Length: 232
Length: 390
Image (cartoon, rainbow over all chains, first blue to last red; front, top):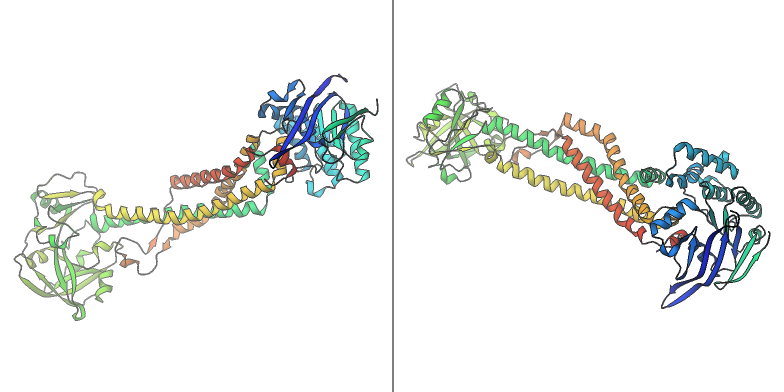
């Protein structure tokens, strides 16, 4: 299981219209990701990290090439099918946390399970377990506005992990956090990666994040310049 | 079910904005129900008054009689037919004779109608028995509107002038034996009621009538040659037209208020979609389809109306109940309007009215919630996640 292919990016190109011309964000990228990887796409701003993550997350479509997620070519997926894959198999962690402000911590973490139509009992058990993973069991009734940035990002991790997805995509997850909080959540994600064998793919240019990665894919001007295994 | 649950949470989470919209919507709903209730109350009350005071259980009109054409009065009368005579004698009908005349209160001339009715009649509420008594004078009764217009009081004497069947002018003094208070203007304005036999004698129309009022509940209305039966559909036609017009006019006013409330909901929806782009992107990233998010926002907007119905029921029910119990006083001077209108109207609210109004408010809110929400379906999730203004 550890080395089975979970994501395959094949000759991926993404162009965005820019006035009368086009901007090419990704140029012929090919990559493979295996189950349980803890990898990151790194590079300067505008190198195409977020674009690649969005396409892998089925939130955007490639202009050319394809991404095969869990054996499903994205080209062949309808909008609804893509939503179902995200719902069942993917978790997202965003730079700005993207927590739903009117919900409590418990409800935010519960949300993906509501979409999966799980029973109340199962949901409660899973949410409490996820909050325990990130050390926020005592904050379940708090609203996001009452939490610190680090706590919000931990809630976002719990929300991404609560359904035990195969893939977690994290876009600059530490960009708004101080060093202590960054290390804390990275350790949390590393622990979950090891315990649950979830594939983590980061988009980052934060050295703290890079120091935790086991594989580093460097993008420059929309092309893979290096693909390095940092830790076995 | 998920959409309803999420929409409910989002709606309550929006706080004051939600409650302002809910209040304005509930205000529109309660005012719409109140307006319809007032008109319905007026309708029921006025028809009851008209039946009691004017039309009884229906009328027979002489075939040439037209109440809107005074020129028809001379010919629009005839001998009371035997079929009616029988009903009259058994207390199931009362004939009325109508004649043109002039009255001279305080020396001024005023065109009026003289109406003759049997003082012993029990068919309508008209206090005709007041005309009994002193036979040396002509006893007459008038309504409060006529009394105000002519400044006549009880026991006042006034000169009237009329033409008999042969076209001869005659004049006499009458005594105001009583002034009656009725909500029905059409038996009051510019009318003087006299004993039927007296008017028949004055006009040389012995045994004649212009129309016959039937007792309420009289089942059959036989065909009588020369006389035309008029049922409630004809007798209330003018009044029904007034009510219909009033319904349209008052509904228009309250629908404008409702439109303002809907505009507030629409604005809230537009603002929500504008401000909550990142949230929309998050919903999509978490696995909702775009149309599920459209539905969520539509339900959220539409739920304003559900809360408005509940809020309207909470604060509106006691208000509407008190209004129906104590009535709504009409402005002074309404007796001069020329149609049946009580001093107080007691609104009547039917379950049907309340349900229809609630459904209208809910449907309209759902539509104005859906229209801006459609924009979500066109959003790019990647741009929504960035909170980019589109």
